[in-house]
Image (cartoon, rainbow, N blue to C red):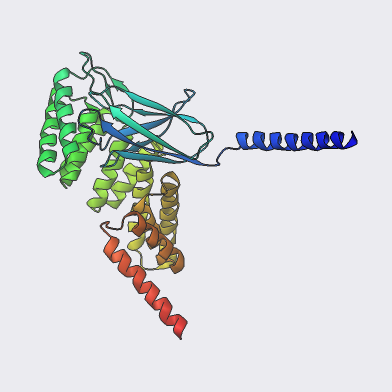
Length: 346
């Protein structure tokens, strides 16, 4: 009888312990989560490139972050606290697409979104600042849709065709903010920097909160070596939308360019520190941003933190093994490794 009581007590203790373990396991959530996904057009299944994806709080708390899809229609949100989120896509000429994802118990979520064409007679347009423009005429919307479809096919001829479509859309409806923005970025794809600048400035004139226009304009000014102008517009854009990893990366590039003009390290230090803070912010928002790892490596190399620089260069090569700077970066890493081997032999 005593043995039975002892066994029952032991069994109860084990059961209570297991119950506590299960409860702890149930309430334990990952410290940081990420959401990645892809946007495609339902008709034909082509990836939807350069589309704004908005991350929102599931409980209606508003927008948390935004990202552009890449040429494969992919996007990513990183460094998020565990919670329930909504991923929303609004694209002119297509129905709003939204998908909820519960990130309270998993560390990585996958979202696949298809854009269905909106055939309703009354179309509404989402502006570059996220507001709704219900005044876009059908003719302007039609030209815009043709331009977006052409950009999705890629190639110089299609991009030139898209430019003509966006120009028509703007001529029909001059307040068409999204068409002006697309026109500016299409000019950028064609390396027509002055035309891109004019289109993007016109976008901001129509909508002063079109933060994506500021970020694109910053890239234009960097390409034109107008560093002061680039800094100004990027700071303005980040004041509107601080969650843009590309905005922070380009601002880091601005400070890097300033530091490169200064040979004395002590005098260059303030610009280098600003650049480093911005590139860290960019990598916090998007750890897989290859260009940010490359720039961070250059910054570390400038202050003789060679081993840390190699880590960043190696990560850049992992993310973009065939990137535009991959060959010279690989050669630099090999050169550093060779020098290190020579020193160890002495």
